[in-house]
Length: 221
Ligand SMILES: C[S@@+](CC[C@H](N)C(=O)[O-])C[C@H]1O[C@@H](n2cnc3c(N)ncnc32)[C@H](O)[C@@H]1O
Image (cartoon, rainbow, N blue to C red; front, side, top):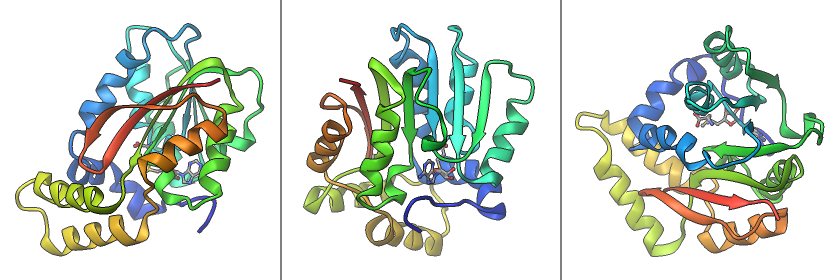
């Protein structure tokens, strides 16, 4: 699949457990996001590829009032998000792609968490551009994804394996390692910086890392 990666029934249902097990420190990262973006002037947030709404939850619970729009092309994932935010008047959920959203009114901030590695190029760049096009100048963008290349990437894959909880199923661990290395589309830090600048962002700063998972902050030019 080139433009989207659809999460259907079982995969969507088990998603939160999946994250908890296989992405060490992800919940810590999510919990910090409202703090990282607390100085953003316009508190309107685009959560691209919001899935079941993990990141939306943090902003919806924040002491600052955010107007949040989550967009995702997987109906099964979005169904879970709809359940969670049924009664939240400041959360809007859109079934589709970022390009389905009007460019105006532009958002003050955006997130793209654990999405880019499903896409090949040029779809990675197209998605980053679609997000940049929907941000106000100077707007903040947080991205988290599988990043790295060469020896250091392989060492970080090995560290990831060591960070997984005791007792994870050995066969599942093997499958997951293979998927990260050979099926998902990680990119080098250098290429990531290049894509961001091409898409219309200032060079991003890496502010978080848990083995191969890196969190980046950038502003729109
Ligand atoms: C691993 S989940 C991450 C969900 C959420 N961001 C989180 O961190 O919990 C990836 C999500 O990306 C969505 N996705 C796949 N292709 C996409 C695209 N081209 N644009 C936006 N979202 C996409 C999938 O439907 C899925 O819900």
